[in-house]
Image (tube, rainbow, N blue to C red; front, side, top):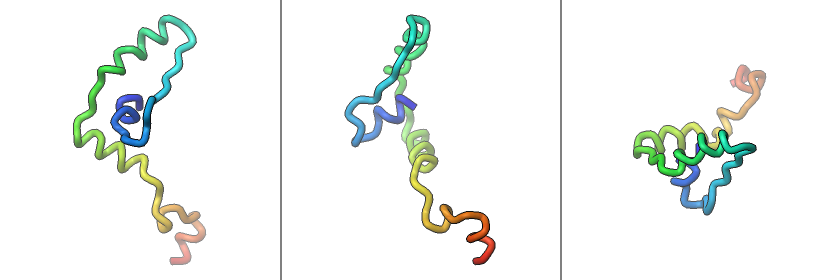
Length: 64
């Protein structure tokens, strides 16, 4: 998630929090993680808002 956020032009500084040194040690290596173009595309697609058709309720969808 942090690598994807770093790649977003509208995100100035992704924020990660750690409650202890062990969590910080797990988070720090993620700062160097670089996602490939295809990985970024898949994550962009997964995080895009649904279209009007996709956002209908099941009852609304059954009436189409």
